[in-house]
Image (cartoon, rainbow, N blue to C red; front, side):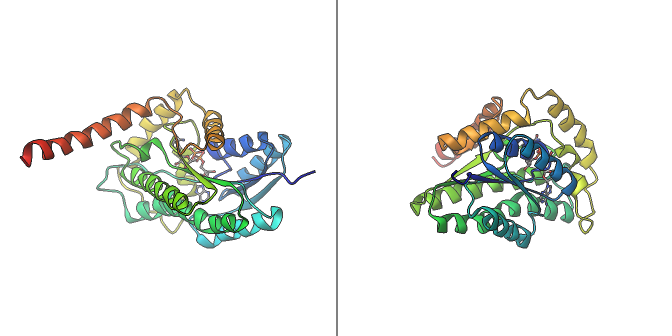
Length: 277
Ligand SMILES: NC(=O)c1ccc[n+]([C@@H]2O[C@H](COP(=O)([O-])OP(=O)(O)OC[C@H]3O[C@@H](n4cnc5c(N)ncnc54)[C@H](O)[C@@H]3O)[C@@H](O)[C@H]2O)c1
């Protein structure tokens, strides 16, 4: 029997990450499930195994480069290679742009942006050395394609993931690499992202004063979403097979992207057709 293809998923203890791990199991892949929450991670492992796939779990803080390097080492040690990497772990803080704290910025950029960067830095060179086709999916958000009030820290982190992923895709294309990249941009989905504080490091305790006021809006949006984490995972897997870069599961995200682009182009035309004439 040939060795199974292997998928690594960070943030696999909950929500979209757990759904991605299960979607990969259904693809017949072996799964490496990584997360900072060890107890819930064991539940993901049990679910993946119940779906008939081999599953290795590893506790990993993606904001810590050494942890992610150990994850790559362990994945190669167990299976000799990785075919799909989902840099999915993420956290959210809310609040007005001006009162987010240093701790808010350090925590969210550390997990959402540097977690993705660490994943690419540890896994991509090994994928390239193996010389086989592989695919990396970075989880951004609709908040990485557009912007909303009360979300400056989260939006900045997710816009950075899009920019990083676009540059990565261009670098790989220029290098003639067989490795593909996608960026996953869901809008609100019912998960435990509204309870992100559960994973906040004790060393970064200071929360901005307006954070709680915006929480209700997010919870209402998640409850109203017709799209589930399982839908998001299915769309992501389809995108890998089709080698699509932008993975946008919610139809209404199209209008937000259009509105933002129109605003940019409207101001651009104003300057170049009126002000500079
Ligand atoms: N739920 C949504 O509405 C939504 C929308 C757009 C994007 N996203 C993104 O989807 C991804 C998954 O989030 P979710 O909605 O499933 O939330 P979730 O809270 O249910 O799952 C996130 C997982 O990431 C893990 N995690 C947190 N910090 C970590 C760290 N430092 N190292 C390793 N793991 C860590 C958590 O333990 C958790 O298991 C995130 O990147 C999030 O920003 C979510």
